[in-house]
Image (cartoon, rainbow, N blue to C red; front, side, top):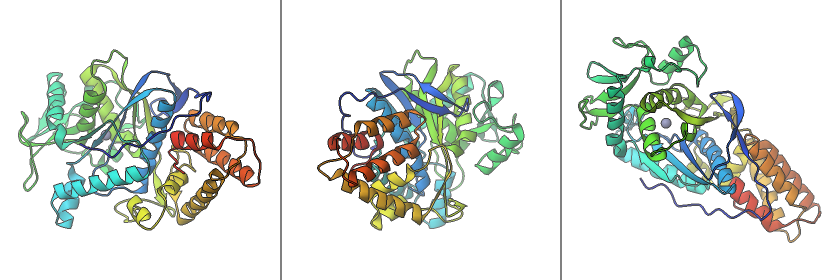
Length: 413
Ligand code: ZN
């Protein structure tokens, strides 16, 4: 599937030392070195196209864009893959509720999301893969699981049995009862009769009345969500790899740790005998005015609405970078107003002929990003530099600052 137009990335000034990157791995709970390599494989779970693009999405994709930019600044190539879950229960439910065709809804939301990502200057994925287009791939992965004895039917549906996977739960670090509760909350069916294990997940759902279906050896139906990501990640990121982990980074919002990423990890381990990702990275959730931002509460703030109301997409980026990616954050109008006024001052500083000493700023930006994407420190350093510049301090290279802010932070000024 076509993603969005590429985003130009300037080259950092020569002599800038790009430090090794450390990121918190959800599996260990610690900051871990991302070993320096010539190329990386990064998979970030994409949207289900029915409510794009709210600020929670924006925060997540911004986080992985910062990682993408940082690894590229080290001189590496990044094979970045993202899926689009363009067939799933929530999409069909929303289409039915609104009386629209589910494919029309998906196409319109995919287009909106791409436009939002381009406006936010998020580097597009190299492979942008829809679930519908991947059905043969997913069916092949289900067949491979079947050969390993990990699939069983319940009625005309098929489930993945994770009981053979000894390390299940090692990513989310939850008790059985916590996993069961969250599984039920997030679309799972822990109490369904006929299951071998309460946390086994659906991999192939037989066609329901009035819903779409595709032929397969498991009957006409459609894929489950978790196996979709597992199959796409293995196909596009791991052809013949000799490395001990299948990919370098698997990412998404923290609400994906369980069940989604735990299930993908388990399926990949059964399919290949290897760990899915060297590093599992998760971004916090975004709330609004003290409440969780959610579809059910109807309080989603959409990037497209903000931009249509005249908000500079760079101000959205700037505002989101004011907090650490791993922490949950409350969005507010005040937060956006502050970011807009800070961005205005930054633009004013960048437009000056003489600016404050810049190499120190660039090194702070790099050192902060290298330390688990510590963007609050980055923003504080930028604001101090802006203050000194506007006060008339000199000695810096404005082009080096402009290029660094663009290449590393995606801030086009
Ligand atoms: Zn996924």
